[in-house]
Length: 122
Image (cartoon, rainbow, N blue to C red):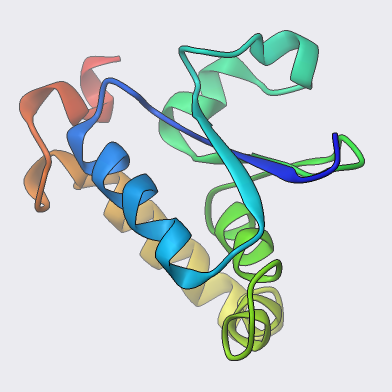
């Protein structure tokens, strides 16, 4: 794999809307849904992928959640590369983790979200 792969939940309107906006940041990634790929072949934990966005690095490593988003930003131009690096450093990392988990837990209530986006239904 030459470029990293961002995976999002194709059953979630909020996730799909967010995935459509990410390329506008100028990042150098490919994108797909968790439903359209062989997660096991990519080394992606299927249960975790439903609640935390996975990003498969070109070397096969997998990040989830806020770390996945930080890695995606790291493939983009300035200032996004800097933001991606900062998201993985103290004290931003724990804050970014909390923010990401709050967004994921409430994605059914956010713009583009539907009842199908609710994590507790999965």
